[in-house]
Amino acid sequence: MHKLEAVFFILFFSIFLVPFTVRSQELGLKHELLFEMTAWLDEPIEIGDTPMGKRTIYPVSGGTFKGPEINGKVLPNGGDWVIKIDSSTEKLDVRAVLETNEGEIVYTHYGGFIHWNADGSYYFRTNPVFETSSEKYAWLNYIIAVGVGELIEGGVRYKVYKIN
View (cartoon, rainbow, N blue to C red):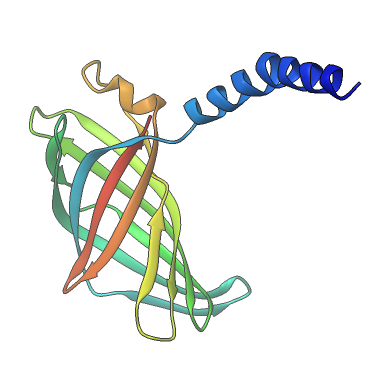
């Protein structure tokens, strides 16, 4: 009886589990750099304590972005509507307009978080969404992207990745 059970186990494993295991490995996330972006910020506008938290608006004064398939400038008309949730976490609500080197316009908006650790380091991630009527860059309308942020003097820098 043990040999029969072993045969059934091997058959079950071969038929059902091996294909599932291979398929699970195929579902892993792969990414590629979409672009690096630097956005310069004007003086913040303090709204203060609200029922949602402490609100501060950081107007964008301009910037640049550069990647393998898309390059251009950040137009000076966006901003980040930040809510300080607690002493170590800020929730981001960013809107910006990008203009490619070819003059194509791309609107982006994204949420995200900056979470400060006790040692002064921070976790800074965003989830950009893109909208454009450009035929050349229409593919941006249909991607999932993740940004890794860094605070720099006078602004922010992001590496934005396309998830494949």
